[in-house]
Image (spheres, rainbow, N blue to C red):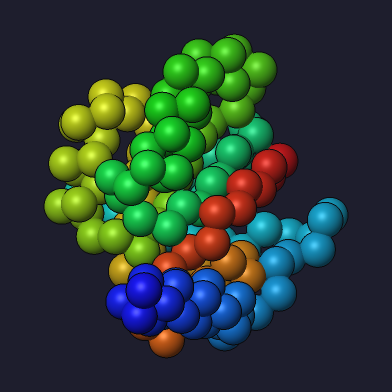
Length: 148
């Protein structure tokens, strides 16, 4: 019984710690200019927001490659990417993971759009999605922006 209670206390403390995290900046306001970026994709190619002028951009941030929620999200975008492109939108995924991690993730799940590596955390910070947790460190919160 004591072990169960200790485990329950540990889980409760971890859940509380998840609620207490630092967020560096606010998200851009609706209608404001989207923060620019230049990041490497899973192939090592550089991608910049200005490459997509004249198109809608679905820019989604996610916490970590190859985790359950992020895998569900990337596969949903993968399955709908043709519909989004037909509507004139390009999909870009962003996390703090490195290019090598993105390459493995994209290959494993047949991702047909760029996964961008924000290893400096500057883009996540500019979009107000950078979070820092005392135990797991920095990560991008799950947020999606539609940019015209």
